[in-house]
Image (cartoon, rainbow, N blue to C red; front, side, top):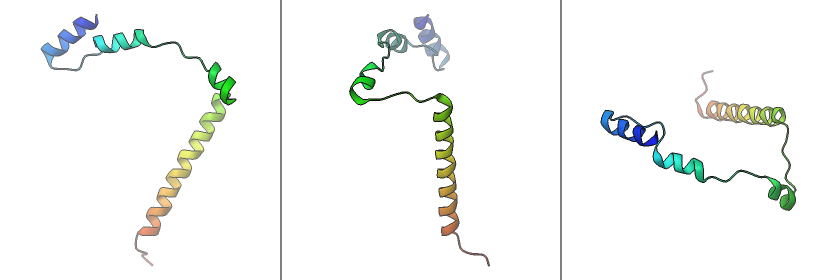
Length: 78
């Protein structure tokens, strides 16, 4: 199927959805295991909700810092 996608991409001049290289890469990847990180580094997975909440707080804080910095640079209109 990937070979047909490559041929179609060449004929139509569009990107192929699944190339032979990407298919080979999918087959070559080993399954993920976090046991080594847990054993050697003491790593642990946090609950997804907590991670999303912290990420959102980080990005909101970053946005606010950029806005504050932009406001400090603009000339005062008073």
